[in-house]
Amino acid sequence: MHVAEKAWALMQAKGVPHSAVFYNLMVRGYALRGNVKDVLRVTGEMKAAGFEPSEPNMSALLGCVHCA
Image (cartoon, rainbow, N blue to C red; front, side):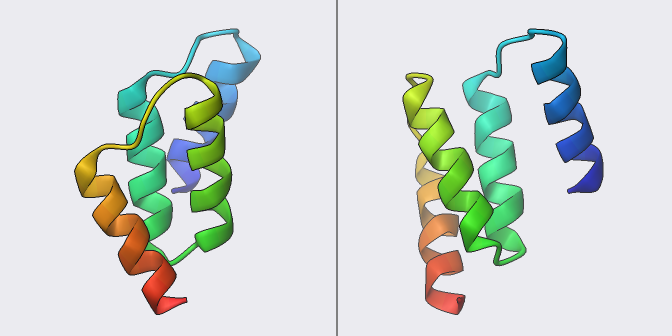
């Protein structure tokens, strides 16, 4: 996740808009690590940007919340 977070920050710093694919990758990565706080944060940012989480990510999110 460290590399993905660096890429995320670099994209943001350069003004590159995040895509649904990148949001979904970040959500899934945090969910697989059980990081509920960041899953919810990125999901909120994703929805605010007009994107919806994919079905596999929703499953990962539910698993993440269940394990927390």
